[in-house]
Length: 291
Image (cartoon, rainbow, N blue to C red; front, side):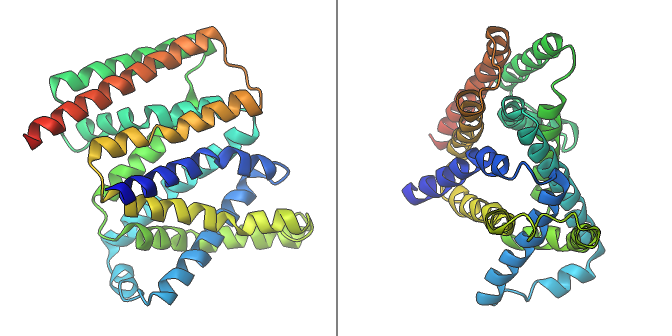
């Protein structure tokens, strides 16, 4: 279990520091960063699968229309999530993007109820209500819904929902997802190069290296997470996931000096209270099942 905690925690810590990585790439457009992230992720994952000789799954997966549809949809959701996050970070919305990953577990609960017809335990309605109150308060405060947070939470929550019914492992699934979007991503990068607007190469060695490493920083935490989450209780995995948005929030406030007023603190506090109640309820329920 200790190795599982370490792997999962390391994954969440890496995700937490993503704003700094993408801020360094701010001169590059979000679409171009996204396409490089897709393309280099496929290259990196393909290398791992080649070294470990794990390509026997690919032909049956490609021949199965349902599998292709699942992973194409998952890939689109991932692209929406990645693009929104990259754009938000480089547009000065790190604080609001962190909110998306704070409310993501509660969005997943709602999707389970609405799509999978899951039933909530009575105590689980409390955090849902608190989170809704927090979102309504922030909507009133911003004079608009916190759409960045909602897009991030809904896209990743729906992605997780689809992955629940997907037949492949995390690494193979991500390989297929990025593979299905590789051609349009590569096409866009070639198009930029033909126009003389590509950042890879002309922007210098450091920028080119960071764009190429986007595949590594995408795949490594996912692999650590997939390895760790299988070895730890579900409630503990749920608790550890708050590491990521907490780090992101602190980075947004302390490093990039984004505004965080006392009114925002009230809205976020409602979300944090909801997460605390949700985690406590999950812990108590798991203990009861274990007794």
